[in-house]
Image 1: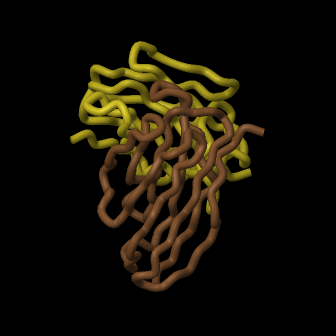
Image 2 (image 1 turned 135 degrees about the horizontal axis):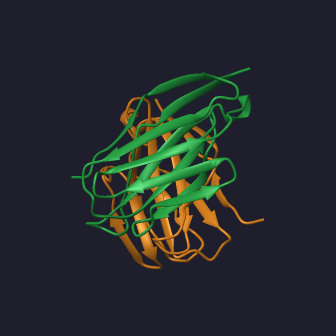
Length: 112
Length: 113
């Protein structure tokens, strides 16, 4: 089944404790992207990647890191999480930028 | 900077009525526009993708139009059903940067039996 998977689905952590949210797709897509969704602010793009080793900032990249060492994986790294990074995070992928995006199920992160 | 607006923020209609959802964007230089559906606590499901060169797309009871020059897209859902209750989001792929997407805040739809 073609899909985008994210792990973990739920995470509660404390300020400053490094964490990684994994994203993997099995559709051989070149493009992958991370978003956060907050009430009243909607979905905002954090980082995106056009292909392996090619990443760029979205609208809200501060406090996040990404890497794209393999085509199928695009992990989101929070080096020192803070409470304002409490949010619902989505990973998405598409074959090319012009094609439709497929979204993962989301990761709900709480930073205490 | 591109801004995407969806009005109304919420909508309630009786079953069987047609739904009309609006999406407007400030910069007409876009690559495409995509409509999504989001159920509470769930991810986004793609409904329709319209390329910048297209005027409309159809899938079953769904029809989406795009008027780039006026910065508007409309999603029509015919003969609504309670199962259509969800939040509907539109997103534009920005013309200034191919990789960047801008989302609207969404329209929350409730279809009452």
